[in-house]
Image 1 (cartoon, rainbow, N blue to C red):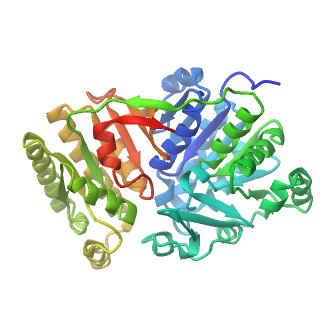
Image 2: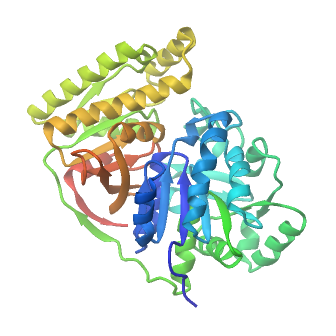
Image 3: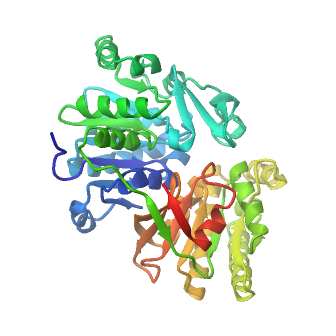
Length: 454
């Protein structure tokens, strides 16, 4: 038994940081992977034939159903053309979504007619990221303490998609009418998963959620997906899909076990931007402030006025260049955690301005990207960080980066990548960090380098 030739998996990520997490799971298992940051041209698409996995990163997590209807079918058709046996809609490992924004259900409804499959496995858990699913309910850890998702300190009060339901089947049922089933953890651990999968399919379930708690159930999830894929299969979930497949392929001897003792060198200076308001990012900002970084605040409320925001972005870039000249690493931020008073001011500004939140969020991310672009062009830096899932998408597009390849593990879910760009930024090293990702020293780690066992 061996893996087929050509691409094994194609995926679309509904935000940029999550897309890089899917790439990471495959690339560091020895499967060459490229992540496009826009739907590639035919020429670039043809050049990707050498890769075992091809991804396209997007911003669907921050968009409404109408945007999805207008934009996702073309992306799914491009993914279908890759001809991989598995195509994956990559959602966040905390399942950020709602009927009105980032609807995973709407994405599934648009994908199925184009990407097919007799059933649609759903794996959201990712033990490497501290995400666990039991009896259909998702749990996520913070500092090693597990929280049911509807009681999670960040996700329960997420500013856009607060999670009031930990049962992912129930949550997803608000977004699609497709029948949803479950293969639970006890079944997964007792050798009855194939029979349970057959039973769920026989009763009409199309989307079937797979519980994952540990290495054993991760391998079993990968086995179910790979051995029941048919001619093609459309899957949905976090990077747990890729991690499960890799775990099964390794356990079955289809690919070699990976060795991830990796060193990446220090650089003298880096620049970072953050549009994240998570408590994890807040700790990272605080740690950076005490270790050679200069924190430069940008008032996100000013983004309701495009001209004012452009002035703020330019001023922030100038201050960042001054910090570099003074021997400090600039970190431009819009908030320092969920309790930052700036968040309340931002919400008030949106309400009173009448400008749509989508427009303002796009403006913020693009502005941070422009600031980073200006800093890179002037200072000639080698390495940068963008924090925030939605921010990352808009920022890298403002920098004209069209693709990433993973070069070294950094933190689970946030690899260090090399950029491909139609600008002088070609070959710049960049890390895209989601709000919940990384230890307190992440910004310092990117700058200082280290030996990492991944």
